[in-house]
Image (spheres, rainbow over the protein chains, first blue to last red):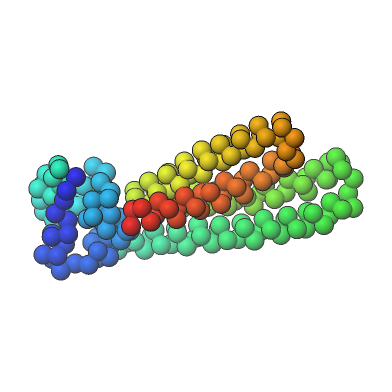
Length: 63
Length: 134
């Protein structure tokens, strides 16, 4: 699954650590999601969508 | 949001401390027990109690590890799941294979070696899967 997390984070000038702190996860988790090595759970995906004010399908795209 | 991070760090610190204290206690019980068992008749009630006393700190360590796992995020939990799965299946395979070799004359090894083997394989699995998700 592709995602726009890195772009959205860059728009806000947040580091991976900043985003991790806001989501309550580790920086490694943010990095793994951004690089496509890990697909987040539905609750975390909702949390990400809420944080960026978008729908899940606007951030996560099927390959 | 910061509260989550701070709360987790507090739990992580307490759990890690619990693991370290448990390990120190384990080695103390092990060494002290081995020393005490020199003067106690084999099979006596006191001997049995002393012999299994290292199980108490090990249980304490496992409890701390479980607490830590419950409070880590989902990726860390997945890494731990893979690492524990790798450790359990590899330990099962190795002990089963060695058990078959024992039927062919290999020396019998103490069952107390199984837990350290599992822990070593768990650490190996953790390092590998952490690297894979990096």
